[in-house]
Length: 215
Image (tube, rainbow, N blue to C red; front, side, top):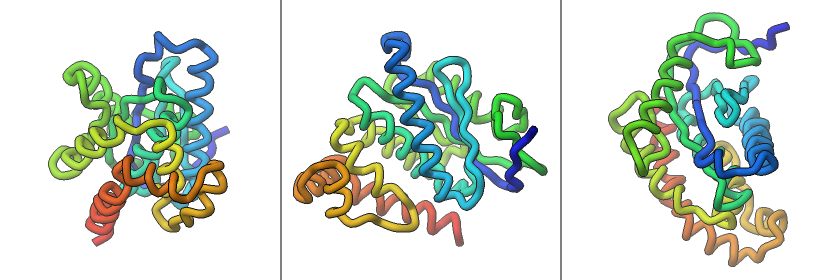
């Protein structure tokens, strides 16, 4: 039985855990639990069923109904992983494209161009770059922003990642007090973590990308 979500233009994120061979089976399971939980959280962002599928042992793929949020979503997946520990990270390739009709819930069965392009982008990223871990297949300004966001977010500590994750929701910003209570931290500690994570600049950049996409 195929679960369906009718969309015309989507974004596809294809990821691969960094250094998975050095992780224990329990750690790999922990990483995928964090990714799946983050995907469930993001379903509310996209206004439609969000599809998340594990691939090739340590790989994963997700289809997003709102392509304008693709970079924001990629950063959220990184934050979800890094909040579990500094040993967790993922390569992420982003592609946009058209799909006709219905998507299946198992993305391993999808062969539309956008899924192929996202997977090819991941292969190219891992082959050609020793430092970059995120790639936006459209190139140009979107990939430029992705390269910079990647550079900033690779430096997140687990505490910074845990602090920034709830603030990456696109439509409603939580209060610092609420987040501090949920994390068992002081409000001042959350503020410090967000500043160190580059949150103010990242949030302005993401809003600029999303507003341009909506024009």
